[in-house]
Each structure stands twice: as C-alpha cells, then as structure tokens.
Amino acid sequence: MPSFFRFPILAGLAASAMATLTATGPAQADRIRNPTAVFAGLDKITGRIISFEVAIDETVQFGALQLTPRVCWTRPPTEAPQTDAFVEVDEVTVKNEYRRIFTGWMYAASPGLHGVEHAIYDAWLTDCKGGTELVVDPKEPEAPPPPEEQRKPRTPPRDPNLPPPGQQPPPPPGGRIDVEPPRGVPVQPQRPSQRFFPTNPAPGRDPAASGGA
Image 1: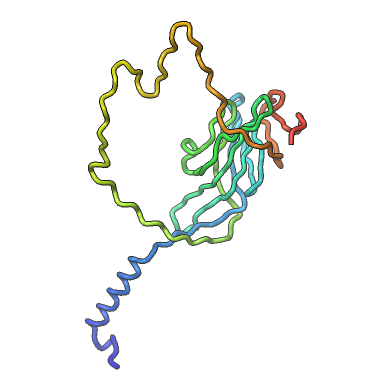
Image 2: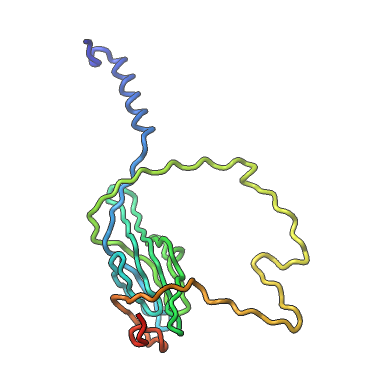
C-alpha cells in the first residue's frame, strides 16, 4: 500500500482533515479544586482588614457575617488566571436572628463587584489554596448574538405623572411610610468553627454567648 510520504498531496489533505476535526471538537478548560478559601474582612468602624482561611463546607464568623464556602476553583499556570468560589453568607442580627444575605460566586479578581457589603462588615474572596485535583470540563459553545429586533425592544412611552424609575412615589398626605423589611431570608443557626470580632460587637452578635446553636 503506498505511503502518505510518497504522495505529499494526500498527506497534506489528511493533515488538514485532522486539524479540522481537532478544531471543531469540544475545547477543554482546566480547573483546580481547592480545599481552602481565603477571605479578607473589613471592619468599617476601625478600618481594620484581616485575612482568614475557611475550609470547604466549614462555617466561620467574621463580625456579624457567617461565611461557608462550598467550592473554590483556581486555574493551572498554563491557563488564564481565575480564582472563584461559591459562598453562602448569613447575617447574625442584633436580635440573634440568622438571615441568608448572599448565595453565589465570588471572584478574587473583582472584589468590589462580587463581595458582600454590610453596614459594618465587608467580606470578599482573595485566594483559593491547597488544591492538587485537576478537573477538566468542556467549554460550552457561546450562544449566537440575538437578532437585531431582539436587541432593541420597543419601550412604551412613560407616563409623565409617574415618578422616575427606581424612585418611590411620595406617600399620601397623612399616610404611613413603610419601613424597608430586613434583608435576606431566615435560615437555621449554624455553629461556626472560628469567630473573628475586630471590634466589640453589640450584645447578641455572638451565638455562643447567647446560648444559640
């Protein structure tokens, strides 16, 4: 049987076909699963920033915030840097109530957009560490852009008697002004493995001191 080396044209066509199949195959994205997430916490009263480490599925309390990371990913040196973690954050109110105020992804590259802002305490992801498990996931193909008609939906004219978007209408004369309800969703108390209180918290902030679970 003749070899491809004797027929350069056939060899070139075969190489082109192999390259096409390789290019159209699913691209792979390498990620490293890490057992520890590293956070930074800001106390707005004192301006103090501390760094603390939290194991995956471990709950740590920083001030009035309880943080529980569920997964923490980094990229190998051969990939573009990206550090992200899926985190659940609960707030312990002054009445010793637990409310879920954040559930989602935090990105170390943009803490200002993906951190947790609180009246006194802020927390954000800074790093993931200790990982050796490499996970290869196929990248999902990008969705095609929407048609031009869907990009620019027609907006009906706004009633000039209505307030601007985002602004609440003024209360009627003699009417009652509603107070904004507490943020977050009530959740069951969790016992944190560590507690960090940069300032002296108000009574009831520490569940252990109040006899909570």
